[in-house]
Structures are given as structure tokens and as C-alpha cells.
Image (cartoon, rainbow, N blue to C red; front, side, top):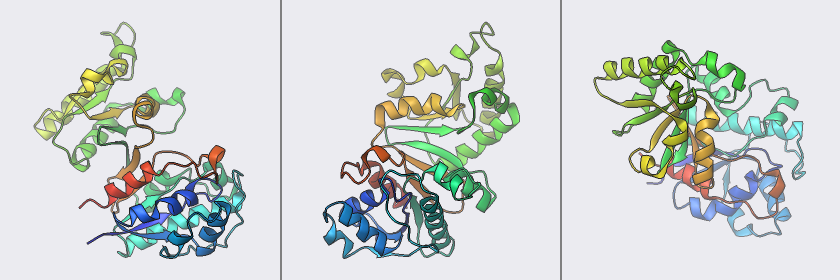
Length: 307
């Protein structure tokens, strides 16, 4: 039986509504989608897209969020749209918490629109952490390559202070339990070339200690590293390893997006609900031009539909 999945619609000024309409027939073969949006907005979007998805509209089920329907103003940052995308996400989470759906798929929000709407939470993952009082672990990728993020969207200047023995041990230990893989996980270093034995940095000695202590706790060599990030993503290394931990997020995300941008997804682990998202933004530059790819969205729903 196909699982029911709530779709948080994202910022309506971007590509979210287009993706939902365009992919509806395809994803209905994967799951039972329940769109957290007013049908009126889907209808407006279909009109802007030259009525290309009228047939899809006829079979789309909606669970409207507790918000007034804003006007669609393609590619504009708008506080009302920010409030609406936030309300759509909350509706999807309520459905998951009540057991009405098996998971939540999120289409892209605009973080500045959330700020304009007076929403202090900086994004989906931060809201999940606050709501469930658990440390959500962000993992991005596709079947060919997965990257778990120890640090996320923080300034480069504060990353070094964040990488400390105890927090890293806790992160790696949790990741080993929730990632659900028998494969070894590679931990990328933080200093260039992992410090070259102290010549250009000492911090990776602490990273190595965290890896050794967690492997001892797990009674297996689950984690490998630290491995220099400049060589970790070479073809011969990726032929042996699919799972990586990036201590600074863009060290892992830059190669992931270069290799698998359209098909990658973003999943949140270590939570009481299943959540997956597209691995791209609102794409204002192509909003309502019928150019948006649905591959990441379809892959997110495939992941959510797995047992």
C-alpha cells in the first residue's frame, strides 16, 4: 500500500507550486501526496503556467494551512509568502504528529521571507530541533553519495571553535545509529591535509581522537578518518565509500552538488518523524517558466516511501 506523505509547499513565489503540479502524476505512483496548500493557490499557479496541469489539479488532495492565501508574485521576496510557507510546514508537521501521514516532504522556503514575516527560526531544520527538542542530523545526497553535516549554515570564522571532542563524539555516535548502513563512514578533516602532522594545523588530532573513541564504543571501525577533503571525493575513493561527514558543511556540499545536484535530497534524521526535502532553493530565476526539475522532489518522496 502506498504511504500518505504530507507536502509542505514552500515559498509560493518560487518553483514549489510548479514542481508539485508537474510531478503529481509521477509521485502518485510512489505515495499518496497530501498537499499543505489551498487549492486556490494551485489553481492560480496552473493559470500562470498556461493551464498545463489542469488534469493534475482534478486529483490533488489538499490540507490547507491556517493562513490567508497570498497573491502569487513570481520571484518576489514577500513577508506574507514567508508566513504562508511557515504555516504550510507547521500543518505538515501536525499531520505527521497526529499519525495522519507517514512522513513530510518540504519544498524550498525563502529564509529572508521568513524573517520578514517575523519568524525567528532560520529554517526547516532549526524549527524541527526546536519543536521536537532533539538534535536533528542533516544528511544530503543520493544513493551514490551521502554527506552528513556536523556544522551547517554558520560563519566560517566560528567553525573551528565548534569542532571539539565531546560534541563530535556525540554526533558521530548518534549518526552511526540513525544512518542505518553497514558501510564505513568517512570523516573529513578540518585542517588542510589534516594538518600534515601538525605542520599546518593541530585540530585534526582531536578529530582523530573522537573517531577512535566512538569506534571503541561501537566495537567496530565504523568511522574512517580524518581524511583530507581535497582527495576524499576522487573517483577511486568514492568507488569504495558512499558516506561522508563534513565538519564544515560546504566542504562536503560543494562536491556533492557538482556531481549530483539535480538528484540529491536533504533528509533529517534522529527525529520522531520522517522528513525529506529537495536539495535546492526557490529558484526565483526560473519561477513560473515551466523549467523546474522535479528529480530531487521525486527522490525525496521515494526515500520517504521506503519502509
